Length: 386
Ligand SMILES: Cc1ncc(COP(=O)(O)O)c(C=O)c1O
Image (cartoon, rainbow, N blue to C red; front, side):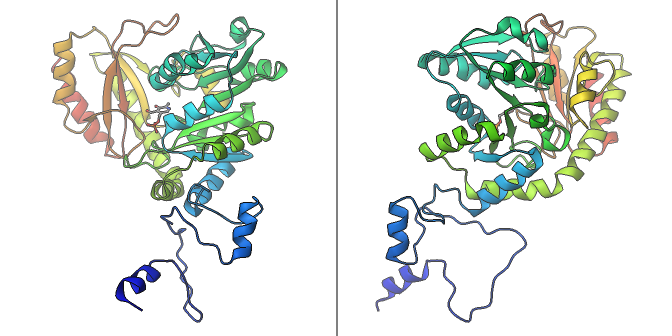
């Protein structure tokens, strides 16, 4: 046998007779397009769609299946599917559950790329979109039409933190056979179990706390029994898959999520209290604080909070002052996304239906795992410039 032939033969993952078993705590990462069948009989079964094992790299490889299964258990769902990012999970779920001629209702505090996809892409395929107020409850009924097929919620909204009355909405939706989707990334499945409040599809951006280290993009959709088949068939028809190494990283993140999340939660609450006492700050926007407009909903639907919250200034800053404040921070990185160990800051103005935050600069903090004292010290020296 020539050297090149031997080299090619060695690249397959095989265990010869008598080899010691390799068993790691974590599942292996298979990097594969082709999966080998043991015999022609197995190939023939696969050709007929009857092979019981995995047939190809798009067949949700073992690390993906392990991650999906773990998340599905936490969410209390029937099936879970992983996607290449949180926004991918959102757009594919919206596509899986709509068709031309449908009307959908989206809460207007959703992550901007969600509404952008609805407005720019979904609408091209004959789906009509209406927006309901961010803190909508039973009044969702006012926004429904005969052809409304889907309601999309995000609670709390990841920039302005409004919470919908989830149970009131899902009860109305069920009676009319409308599918409900909720982006619950803020609470994670540890602090918010959307399906238990009647939501049909729970979305997570696993990019955030689940993976926790700002080094991967991954999303999930977990579905109840009623809608499981629709999502599974859609996912299979599009031959979707999630990158094995990213599923591995997210599965690893899940193992420490409860410890990290508690730490993020406690640090954020302490920093929110401290910020309230500063002369330059206006409103603190944190659902777990009693002064939050939907605090009673937070108590009903969530069992904890995370490290993401916001505040406004007492006196609206000029662009120059805002830049000086943000640039002065030494420990807070300036950047999108959240849920990682490093503290981050973003700033923006948001227009929400009927919101008293309209027109105010909202400073969003992602409180990481640094010492609270150091973060407060950093914020204090930057606030002093205002
Ligand atoms: C609430 C929410 N959902 C979804 C996403 C999208 O997640 P990803 O960055 O994984 O696409 C984000 C990202 O910031 C988000 O804040």
